[in-house]
Length: 272
Image 1 (tube, rainbow, N blue to C red):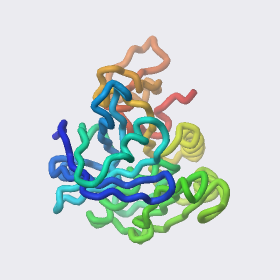
Image 2 (cartoon, one colour):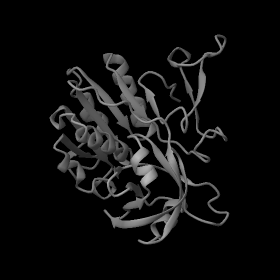
Image 3 (tube, rainbow, N blue to C red):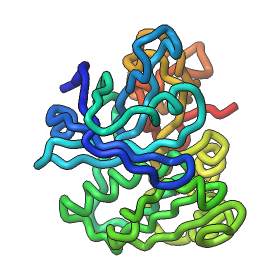
Image 4 (cartoon, helix red, strand yellow):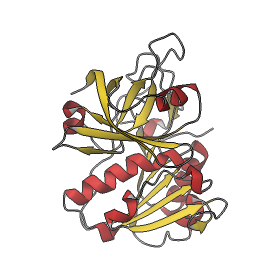
C-alpha cells in the first residue's frame, strides 16, 4: 500500500546542530513499511525545489500509526523541511522501494551505516529484534565525519546490539571509518547489511566480494520522481545478477534505484 497525501508532524526533535528527527502520523505507512524502504517528502508548494526529497524510514510505531525519519540539513530541500513545526502537515508519498530481506535467525549479522545510511539499518535492526531476532547476534557499526554529523539519537544503545560508534576525526567513539572497522573483522561467517555514501559502499562491496561474504547494500541516490518514471536514479548492474531478462549482447543492465532498489546484492552494482 502506498500513501500519497498530507501527513501531520507529531514530533520534531533537533538531535545535533544540523541533524533532525521528525515523527509523522500515518497509519497506512506505519503498518505497511518494511526496513530499507523510503518516503518522498515535498518540502514546498512552489516551483523550487521542483521535486520532492527521498528519506529512509527510521522506524515505525504501528500501535500509534507513526513513522519517523532522521535527516541532515544540507541543501535547499532539507533546509525548507527544518522550517516545518509540530502540527503542520507535509505531502508524503510512500513507502517506496524494495527494502531489505528479513534477517535469518541463527546467523551473525553486521550492519554498517555511514552518515545518513544509519536510519534504514536502525529500522532493520529494531524490527528484527521486535520479531525475535537476538540482539547479541547483530554488530552495528555507525559512523560519521564528526560527532555533530552523527545521526544517532540514543536509540542504537537501547537496542542491545554490539554497537561500535566511529568518526573520521575521533570526536565520537572510535577514530576511523565504517569501512576500517568492518574490514578488521571479516573472519566471522556473517551477512553484511550496509548503507551510506557511494564510495563507502563501493569499498564494502569489494571487501565482501574478495572474502566471498554475502551482503545487501542500500544505495543513496537522487530520486526525482521516486517511482521509476524519470529514470534519473538509474545505475549499471551486472547482467548475471539481474533476476529478470536481459540482453546477452549488453555488458551491463540498467536498474532504477527507486523501484529496483534501493537495496541491491553484493557484487550486483557496477561502480564508477
